[in-house]
Amino acid sequence: MKKYNFNAGPSKLPREVMEATAAACLDFEGSGLSLMEMSHRAKKFQPVVDEAVALFKELLDIPEGYSVLFLGGGASLQFCMVPYNLLEKKAAYLNTGVWAKKALAEAKLFGETVEVASSAESTYSYIPKDFVVPADADYFHITTNNTIYGTEIRKELDSPVPMVADMSSDIFSRPIDVSKYNIIYGGAQKNLSMAGVTFVIVKDDCLGKVTRPIPTMLDYRTHIKGGSMFNTPPTVPIYCALQTLKWIKKCGGVKEMERRALERAKVLYGEIDRNKLFRGTVAEEDRSVMNLCFVMNDEYKELEADFMQFATERGMVGIKGHRSVGGFRASCYNAMDMEGVNALVACMQEFEKQH
Ligand SMILES: *Cc1c(COP(=O)(O)O)cnc(C)c1O
Image (cartoon, rainbow, N blue to C red; front, side):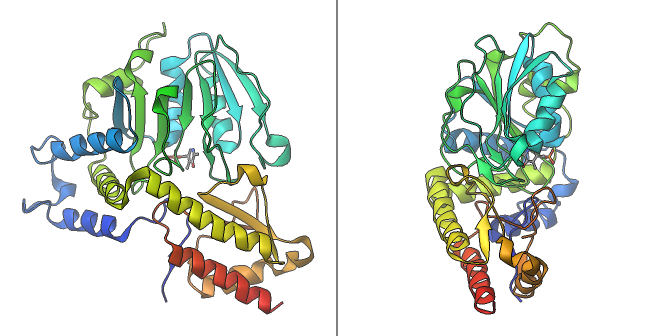
């Protein structure tokens, strides 16, 4: 049976990305060696990092003065690295979900923090709109896509201070104005690569301003200087990321990724809203086009497990909602095609007919 992968992360990748990565794991570009057993300092590997950095800059239109890094530790290590490197006096955070809250918790270890707004009281079902960012903050941290709850900040916010963004689950899904950010980071395992690499886009001149000493490995400047090669980087995940970047470029870039995401979301949210069995879980204007969350309508609540089984039998994978929201979550990252979305919609319609 054909499987449709709606996993929240690690998640679906384009078939050709996986094939190219698998081939390189057996024989890296005719070298007779596997990518897995090659030095990251090999002559043949350096172009992989160089090309990935160049494509990052090209696809996201990154201005001069920014570096692109490939690190270990996941987005979760960035929760700590960001304040370590940037928080001198005070930092502002928008609390839109568990990941945002975790980022804030780390920042508290380094200095004064301000939670400018939070939607925790309603299980993070919306993005707070009325808040003031203190003009004397060192930075303002946001989580652009809240993977667990299915809310997203798709329009660039205005901020009196440079922003820092966790874009783990919506990077490369739309054009962004990088100049508004001092740092953009994320785990690659949602929209970019297999698990194991973390991307960081950092504005060089925002560094070196804090007075605390920073351990070598946690200092962004170490990795800028070392070209992401200060220590051994995750070579296979970086290669896999490069294949995805090439795929995005071939498809038409981030504008085309956005067009596809909006098309998928229109069809799937359309069905969620139309189908009598289901309803969405978040404010309509804040709906994520990456993670689409829905539950059974109250009068059909007892059918939840049945639908889960029904969908699983038809090849749907990973549609169980996060335990804190319940119901269902269809993660539709860049690699998800309309065939997958249509298969899920057909499933929902067939199930509706039976009830
Ligand atoms: C998955 C996710 C994380 C955690 O990423 P790790 O790489 O596992 O540390 C952080 N933030 C967001 C928005 C996520 O979706």
